[in-house]
Length: 184
Length: 422
Image (cartoon, rainbow over all chains, first blue to last red; front, side, top):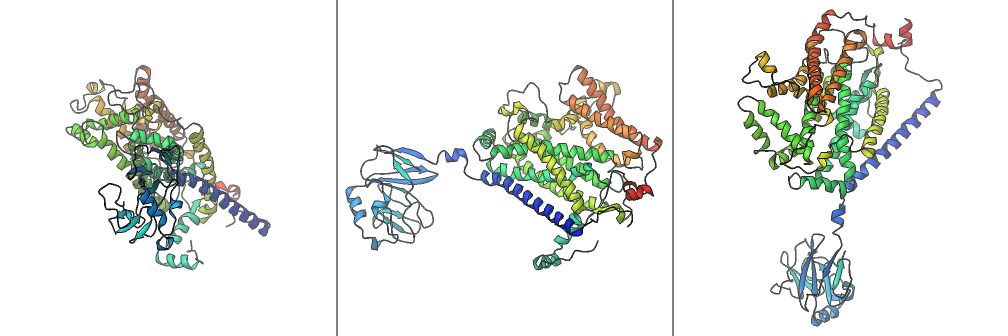
């Protein structure tokens, strides 16, 4: 093929090292570009600003009497808020940790002993335990009872009996006033 | 072309059962390509890249979009304001549509100039036109989705075109709408179709490439490949060339996306659809303007004067027929063009007629964007007339009367110094 002008190169080694350099740098720069382009696509699926705007919510608890419970929605999940009676607080505080499946003192689970705040989702398979309404079954330990597979929670929301592995989750919260609470 | 020897045992195992690596190697690496392709040949692969970008951004946009008349407009605004990088993905998709048409129009005019539609590539050309039609349908239904004023009234006007079909017209329009006006059922089905059609385009692109690889690319000389001396392997020569073209394209595309994202759009489409108020001046997106000009070109009294089927064919009907005809006619171009010479380089008359035709299409596009009255209407009519005269009169006659310049002996003879000296 005398009439072709496909370059054969002068110094073969020099040429192939230049070619390697070009190939490697093209792949590196192109790869970096593809990754940089992919990041916005990945972030696009994260919670959006309007969803995040509702991630922290303030609630007014002034209407809740001692012994009453309310359920509020936070991040699309039910949150149980119970104003505990002194008997319930005493019960929760006096249980020896050795009797607990997921040992945790009551003091670690509350900001103020009077107010118990928990995500109302059973740690077994995600059902909502009974025990919020006055007529509900409260389980063998006077707290909550999950009807799906029979998990019993005590007055601190700790798992005492049944298949659930962990205590009811306590969400991050703080009291912004005597009876106002900011969850999240 | 010998089959490549695979060293990696996994690749070897798969390739022995499903020769996907060998196939890819033959069509992207050692694929013999004419050695004289110019940058005008980069626009095909560029269109393929944009198709992928459009599908990727579109799939993600659909994750946050709600196809309901009460929620669609707000969901798009939410994508723009609240969703992470939503503005970026939407602007990429919006401007990507314009870029897709720009690139495909250049690709089509490239084919027209260099006679790429002629034997044995007629079917390749026709599949390309089917892709173009599917693109137009996709773009039209997609433009309805943001549910702005232009979305709504564009959808109303274009679906009403089908009312010209004799006897069944009104029934067909109601069937398209799923109601008595453009409404929620229309929006739902347009969303469904907008998600479906790109994958049909993808399938058509596969056929387009299959047909292309059967007879290989045409080239600026328009002469056949005569042997291996006329070709170079696709990789690295044209991968590098196409990548460079892609880089230049991305600068332009991202330039619009970041610095003038609404350049191609209509401000009216940021007003939510209102079935009681028509915008003062309805214009389609720029890529439809030439066809819009043809649609409006037929004078009301034209049919009376000529007396052709005056009962069925009104001016409105004739406009619709001409508009669809302007695309359908292109499918017959391989047979309307009687010249055996492909490239305009060697056709002294066609070389100029091509540019006249190109200018005519640009003029039609300009007229399509102006109100249909006075001088603009007259210019639109003449430009429409010229469009059809070019395809139906000039192309067949040229083949008879034009004296083509002598063709080079071979691609390699024409483009290499060794060949030039010989």
